Every structure is written in structure tokens, then in C-alpha cells.
Length: 424
Image (cartoon, rainbow, N blue to C red):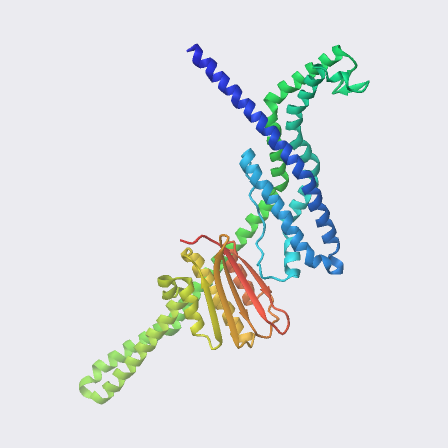
């Protein structure tokens, strides 16, 4: 029993020593990289943003901020792997095909971008110190031991090791005692100091309560929009049933009653009413099919979003090319939202853009379903209150989706929609 206890204690000590050395090496590597990296990113960002008014920054800022995000994401990975501190990124997605102007101000309008920029000076100061301290606590005591071993003889007069002035063997032993004390502290606190560095990184890079509150507000609004949209859709279905198919079925029932009375008295008139009832039943069936297609197209449920959009394009009076690269299917609500969003965009292009050609591209990348609809019409489309595009934006917002529109005067118009989702 005694042997096991000592063996376990020795193992714990070796583990602690290994953790201390690993934390010191990692902290030193972080310090050597974080200071020049943070300084470079901060200076380039400051210069690029300053050059925006003269136009140069419009081109350079997206590239610089993309580099800053890559640097911050790399530090997030290290925080998770080395410290177990998870810092999820919260960047707003930007369409890859957007112009430099839209990308610049889209990135500058993202609160996560400003968190990155605030983090850079913190990382080059307090972050640098907290990363370097574990290495200092481990390696600085070695200097004290070297001084006591004879290094003091070649040191200049009045050399200070910590708060000990080294001027002889006695003071050199005092330096060794100080080093031993620092090594004792390092034994317990070196891994914790590196953890402090990662906690500091999370405190600055992580989303704050204000942004979380804003996120809750946006989700609440989009949920209310979804409820309102569902209620409006239900009223439309009720109205279409009442004014269309229901009215035709009622009329057909009355015709059948009349036919029943005339079949013996006036067979010719009864035949005419039978033909009329047949036409009414066919019209009612067509209206019900259109109504069902408006609720959820059968091709969407049976064959997925790609084929549903292809079927939608075939019904357009404009030449349309569809490119689909979807290795699987998204969840039914996501497919439905994307389908009706595409349908609304195509309707706008046909009615208002005077386009004679439309291109549709659907693909899934980086955990997002991306749909791009481009037409060669007259352009000028904007997302505004009361417009169809605003309704699409609200529909996509229910699923954390985004809508981006590039539509200069005289065209072309490119509408990009993105919805985060996984494919099955």
C-alpha cells in the first residue's frame, strides 16, 4: 500500500512537471508570435481603414480584415486545444461574390470585426505579458542557479537578479534562493497563468451580453415575422378555397341536383349540365393543384430543392439556366424557405427587371446553403420596406439566413441568399 502511494505521488509530480514545462514552452511560443502578429494586424487595419475616404481602403480593407479574422481564428483554435477555452466566432456571413464596397462596409458593420480590432492592442500588451509569464517563471530561476554556480564572477558589478544585488558568493546564494522560490511558485501557477491568457482572449474576443441581447431581439422579430407570414398564408388559403374551388364545387352540386330532376324530363338539357359539371370539376381540380403547389410543391417534397427549382425555371417565360451542386438534402423547412425565396426573386426578375436571361446557382459550402440568382435586366433593385426583397429577408431571417443584393443601375442584378444548414 505504501509503495502504491509513493508511486502515485511520483506520477502526479511528473505530470505536474510535464504540464509546467509544456505551459512554459507554449506561452513562450505565443508571446513570440502574438506581439509581432498583433502589431502587424493592428497597423495594417488602422492604415487601411484610414485610406477608405480616398478609395484605396475600399480595396484593401476586406483583405486586411480577412487576415485579422484568420489571425483571431487561429488564436481561438489554440485557446480550445491548449487551454480548453472555447471562443466561438460570431462573424456575419458575407457573400463571396459581393463587390469590394459591400464587403468593406459589411465587415465594418459587423460587431465581431470591432471586437477583433479591440483585441489586437490587448493581445500585444496584456496578452503578451500573460503568455510570457509562464516561461519567465520556469526559465528565470535557472539564471539564479547559474549565478550561484559561479556565473556571478563574470557578471558586471552591481548586477541585480530580481531584488537581489549580486556582488559575491553570499549574494549569489541569495539569488539561487530567490530562483528556488520562483521555481516553487512556477510549479503551482505556470499552467494557471497560461489559462489566464486564454481567459483574457475570450473576454475580449467573445460575444458580450449586449450582442447576445441583440441576437435575442433579432430572433424574436424573425419569429414574429414567421408567425405573421404563416397567418397570412393561412388566410390566403382560406380565401382561395372559399372563392375558388369551394364555389365551383357548390355550383357543381347544384348542377347535379338540376340534372337529377331533368334526366327524365329533358335529357338534352341534362347532357348540357353534365358537360358543364365536368368542366367545373376539372377547373376545381386545377385550382386545388395550384393551391397545393403554393403550399408545398410535390416535386420539392419528393425530389428535393434542386429539382424543384429546375421545375420552377421551366415555367418561366425567360430563358433560365440552373446549376445545382447539392450532395444531399436540407431539412424540409429550410428547403421550403429557400424554394419560395427563389420563387419570389424570379417573379421580381420577370415582372420588374425586363430581363431576357436568368442564371440560378445552388450549392452547399462551409455549412451553408447558398443560392445566387442573377439576371441581365435593368437593375436598381433595393431591399426596402414593403418590397418583395424585404419579405424574403424576413423569411430567411427565421433560419438565421441572410440576403445580399447587388443591383447597379442598368444591371445586372445578383441576389445571393445564404442559410446555415446541414445536408443529409
